[in-house]
Every structure is written in structure tokens, then in C-alpha cells.
Length: 424
Figure 1 (cartoon, rainbow, N blue to C red):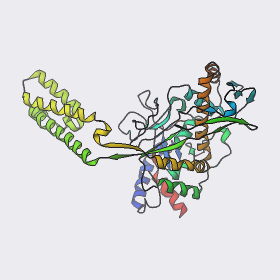
Figure 2 (figure 1 turned 180 degrees about the horizontal axis):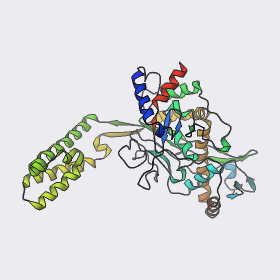
Figure 3 (figure 1 turned 120 degrees about the vertical axis):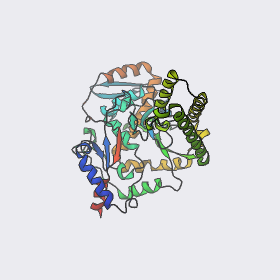
Figure 4 (figure 1 turned 120 degrees about the horizontal axis):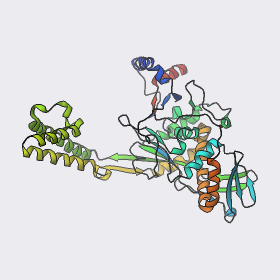
């Protein structure tokens, strides 16, 4: 979704519609947090795991295709050439991270609100940090789901915002709480977001490509993250990047498959009316209530004799629907493509993104680089990793505000129009 001056040329009626909606729902909307014109909602769900994602990244699977995006970090760091033979160990004491490389000791600036979730993330078998599952209006699950390590904490909120790349009017800003105060950790203060119009236009124009992408994934797949030391301490090279993808559809084949499905529903409805006669009602429409209809037919079968041909036709149509629902993307005519050239060209924009929103992209970069470094230690020095893990787990710190990561979001058009009017 992109917002620009061209999208809302006739706004009067729409604006007043949203005004009435906001007045009606004001106690609900303003109890939420927001990023600029994007309202963030924090719903609860009856299903225990409705807000978490435990998966490994596989480009093209249900997590990352057809308009669905996310963040996945899986890289393992490697030492610079001069450190290949040096031992590496970790410690955590007095709420402070210590890194020992050979005979040298370092105290990196990694606040606990970032350290703790990153360590938990690395210690899990899963690499997906954030996943956007698309429209889940009718499902009992969140639209945005998080790795358990990033659920309901500030680092998770920072990572979530990096998944809003295409919302450049929002990406530069930071979340505010219900009182409209910026949500910041002490280590991030003082900081006031500033919208850089030049950077915004540069990034926006790059994203407004003539060959549009369908989705993107923020990842460090195949990134060579290297750690080294100098007089300033431990340092990393290698940054994550956005991998862009697009999905195309064979519309003729899809239309044919849709017609087959519609024909099946027509057959089921026709013969269900023959079998049920006066007992058939719209509440048993197979297009919306197929399960209920099949239950009613099964109950009738147990009670009376009926037309066997009609029942055979219904079973055949249901079987066909099952086979249609199990078609692969290739059979449907969906082609998934990684946009290699565009992805490569956008890598040079990483520095611009860091300038556009320093807090978000420094947090993203730290999460990728430190996750990769911790994985290196985890593999090379597992005994030390286990001891370090216990020390971090037994620590606590109030170095960041308590937050809820969002379950869904909506553009607040009334606030958008207000901002537009202020600029005119």
C-alpha cells in the first residue's frame, strides 16, 4: 500500500465518513498505539499460539509469498582472517555483556532490551522473527505474528516497523502510546523523528518501480557477516537486505478452475434440494455452509430412503472440490519469482534507510549481526554458550518500556487528511 498526493483527490465525503466512524469508535481507536497515521491494535485471541510464529524461512512458502512479508535472520558470523585461531567466549555480569576474544576483553554497547530477545531468538530452532499473514479478518489469529523472543517487547516493535517498507509515509516515524508519547528506551533518548523529504522521495521513487514487486522479505540469507576487533572494540561487517519477490497468475487457467468449482457447488445444491425437498434452506447453501449441508444429508440418509443417483452426484462433486483445494501453486498457474536484479540494486539503499529511521534500522542491523555472532559462539563454544544463556535468563532489567506488539493495523484516514491539510 502506498500513500501519495494522487490517491485522495476527492476527499470531502470520504473524510466525513471516517470522521463519523472515528467519533463512534473513538474510545477504541485512541486506546491503541500508533505510528503516525497507522493505528496499531493489540487484540487477544482464544487460541494460545495465535500471535506467535515458529517457522524457518523458505522463500516461496506460506510465510513469504503472494503479498505476505516478514523478517528472517539466519546468518552465522565468521571471524576476520586475523581472528580465525582465537577463542571466543561470552559472559554476562552486573547487567553487562562481556566478550572475550583471545586475550582481549570487550564490553559492547548492547542494552539488555536488545540482548535478551536476541539471545532467546538464537537459542531457538526458528529463524522467522516477524511474519505478516495478510488478511485474517475471519480467522482467530493475528495478522502480525512474532517469534516468541520478540513478542510484546520493544525490539519486536522495532523489527515490526522495518516490515512496513512500502509505507514510506509511516516508515520514518516511531510508535506512540495511547497518550501520543513516543515509545523509547532510555538508551534511545533523546530522539525526535524527523521526516527527511529528500530521503523520502528517493526511497519512494525506487519502490515505485515499473515492474512492481508483490512482496518482500527482510533477511540476511547468504550475507557474509564478519566480526573483527580494533582500538574501538568489536565490530561487524555485513548487513541484512530486502529480498523482493513477485507472483504472477495464469488467469485463463485460474478462471477455468473457478468455473469447475462453481459447477460443483451448483451440482451439490441442485441434488441437495432433490434429497431434502422442503428441508432445504439458505442456511444449507453449499457455497457457505457445506459442512452443515453434508451433516443434514447424512442425518436424512439414516432416517429415510432417497435417490441414490443424487447422493452419488453430491459425493462426486465434493470429491472434486477437495481435489481443487489441494492443487499446488504450479497447477493453479501461480508462478513465484525472486526479483534478483531489483533486490541487488536496493541493497545500496540500506544506508539511506538507516538515515531515514536511525532507531529502527540500527535495531534491525544489531539483531541480524548479533544473532549471527551468537550463533558462531553457540557452535564453536557450546559449553560457554549454555553458561551464558543461564546468566542472561536469570537477569532482568527495566531498560525499556513495556509494550505490546501489534496484532493488526489500519490506516487512520482522518488523521491522514488532517496532516495533508496542515501541509497545504
